[in-house]
Length: 408
Image (cartoon, rainbow, N blue to C red; front, side, top):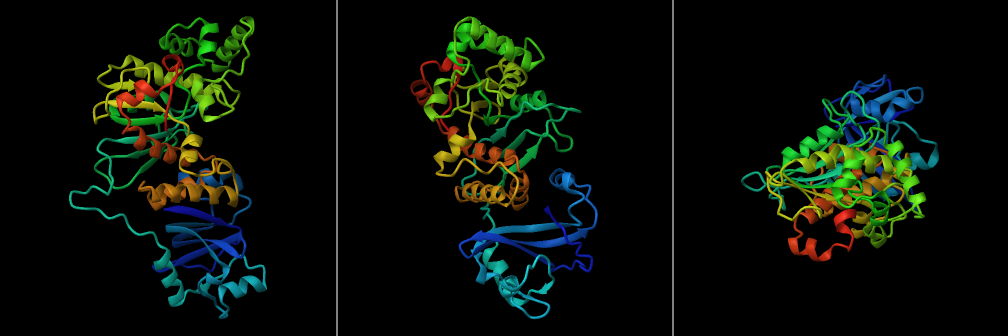
């Protein structure tokens, strides 16, 4: 289930069991993006649904109708393939070419139903026992983390994509859901959840920065992250230490250099995530027993189980590049950003990640790209789950025991 809003009120609409919505936008080169869906209801006011309010709350004065939809599908097709006719009998492609068509009722007829059946994604087959094809043997989790301000025990910027062995679909949740969760509650979820977790914040500092700060062990670093509740104060203190040591501030880790990112753990747009992650997540994970949690490569490798959580750092851009996908342009508002998020989701589906339509729609509508990042990191978790102890011991960089490392 999802929502779509229109500037036109559509007051004459009356939902029926077979009501359908077709929305389309210019896709260039004689093609258009089409969104087809079954319409559940229409509202003239912003719905109370949390997802709808998150998407449209800043546009209440712009949109006049909100459409509750399901069975959503998005495709790029030639204009000539637009199905159906207007009430006056014009084919939709012809009506579009003749006028600034923005809103219309039409009689779908057999052509539209044939189109819907042809473009509807095939259901994921479920063999006896309830397991989908390629289902994991342990829980897998991709986590888009956030150092954003938390209120009421919630962090709406943290998204988790989970795939459990007994389910043939992925579950997509956010810290802003009801009841929601914050960073420390997330750490408790990891401790008690089992499986492989891939989380996207830097797990360690650059080795040169650690030396300037006087940290000789990784635990020294995580203790520092918890030494002051203000990440900005800690960042400023660390920057001054580096200055006094004659060290250039913009130090990258070996893994950052190897994947070619220009960011570093204490970069202006990342330091809160780095420091709060060390304080609120890594700190509690370190205190948990090694029979419960292992953070790689800082702890000895062991295969994840339903009781043992193996936690690995991830970076969505690296995974997207590994999949041959463009890693820019999908974190923005507008049709262009939505198209790129849709293409990423469809690519993950072709790789066997069973994303439900409602979660795909939620991820497409999440302009910040947080939900898409969680799904991308879930794909990384599936790969990381198969990496061996030898790969971790032999393949990590020289400074990994302080800096951290990841492959996927």
